[in-house]
Structure formats: C-alpha cells, structure tokens
Length: 252
View 1: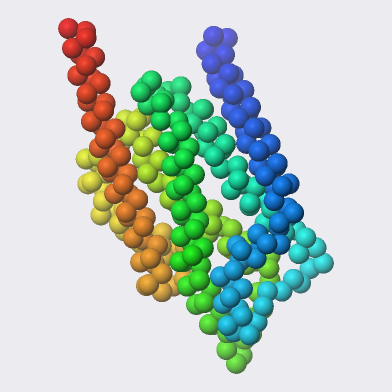
View 2: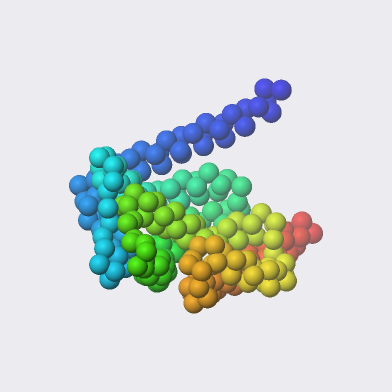
C-alpha cells in the first residue's frame, strides 16, 4: 500500500516545489515591475486610451483605491510575463520524466518556443485585435450615451484577452505533448481540420468584437497554428515509427 502511495506523494511534493518556485519568480518580477507600473499600464491600455481620445474622452477612476490596485495588477501582469521562461521550464521539468531521452533534449527549445508563442499571441491582440475592438466599442457613444470607461474594467477586459490569446497561441505545444503521449496523430488532426476551422471562427467570435473583419483576423492565425501542430504531430509520428523499427531490429 505504501509503495503505491509513495510515487504519488513524490509527484505532489515535486509539483508543490515547482509551484513555489513559479510564485517566487512571479513575485520578484512583480516587485521589480511596480516601479514602472504607470508606464506598463499606459502601454497595455494604449489601444483603449487612443480609441477614447478619438471620441474626446478618457479613462476614469471612480473608487479611491482604483488607481493603486490597477497599477498593482499591472505590475503583477508584467511580473507574470517576466517569469514566463521559468514557468515553462518548471512545466517541462514536471512532464519530462515521461518522455524518451531524445525528447528530453528539447527542453531549451520548448521553453523558448512556448515563451515566444505566448508573447506572439499577446502582441497579436495588442497590436491588431485590441485597436479594432476598442475603436468599435468607443464608436457606440452617441447623443444619448457617453462612454465613461473605468480603468479597472478596461484593464480587466484587456488582461483576460491578453492571457486568453497567449494561451490560445500555445496550441502547437499542446499538440506536441498530445502526440508524444499517443493521444493524437497527424492523420487524426488532418481529418479534424474542418472542425478546427469552425472552432477557430467560434473562438474568434467569442474574443473579438461582433464584426467579421476582426473575427477573421483572429481565426486565421489560430487555424495556421493548428496546421503547424499537424506538422509537429507528423514529425513526432515519424520519429516514433523509426524508434519502433530500431527497437524491433535490436530485439531480433
């Protein structure tokens, strides 16, 4: 009984240690970022600020502590981004024992690619999607209604989309692990391409304003990332097939 529980206990202890390291790195990054919280806030919300300025308006703070806590959240967001390489390194360290030795050697590429994909998704939203979204929302102002956006609500919306896009752009990495685990293969992914395309447009509709242009802007990169995942699954499948052939030859 104890022998069966020990591995689980060890895994939980390892997971706890890795989570503590992630939280410490995040905290240190947030503390260092707080000195630049105002600049970080201005950069992250730049699309919303510009869209409001075009309508002759600006962000508002309606609670006494709203500015302080929103700047604190800005520092936490920056700290999270700074800690991304370590976060992905800890993820890799936790899942790598279940991989083949040849697959364990791609630790550094995994960390670099995962970090780059997350930042690419966030940058895509900030540079392309958010300006369109906030311009559309700001244009709803009319003779009866004046836009009075609070900094807390706009920052909350922007952060949710920021994180959602960053996670969505990790699709090739997720497909890699599913392929290594034998859950999916390239043939299955190709047959599921129509469903993936529909899912991309549905996700685009959920994360973007209700206009066709911004939905297409978001759906196309997601479909392209899915196709990249198909290529990754194909390479993983070929590597596994060669390994199986070599193992059979060695046994015979």
